[in-house]
Image (tube, rainbow, N blue to C red; front, side, top):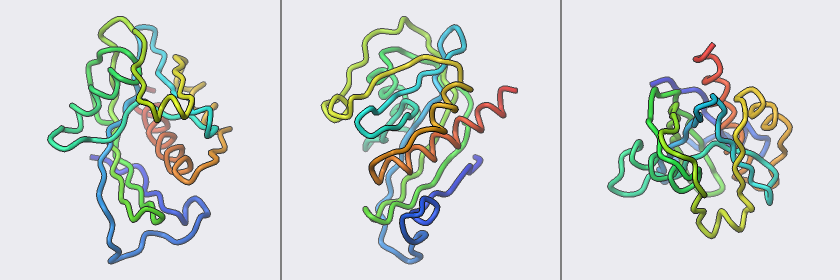
Length: 171
């Protein structure tokens, strides 16, 4: 397992690095570089907060990381997939919430027709939309993003690390 990045408030210019000995809660999440039959990837735009992300989400109690990823892709991208190689892991220290998040990213390939996503209310409120485009274009969109919320900076930096590593893997 390759750790691609450790992200803290200090990396984002928002305060201190992780607080050693601090009382953090652990959260795991699963992400994917999800490819369609044309090789385009799924990119999600959170319009309300001005940034893009990859599909995925939190691992619920009793789920494996891959089970969580399958569920999230079905909900957010409207399709089934085959989960392949691990891209890597990113560790985030979100001091504002006393949270350590470990995010695991995989390469995944669509194995069904792509239907309508089934967004949760929070995703609808964020004005979440899906795009399918080449990975290089997705990364360029991310490079111009300017997240407006605290979480957005972490999410964007994490997703860019995954996408940059993916592009190295497929070249």
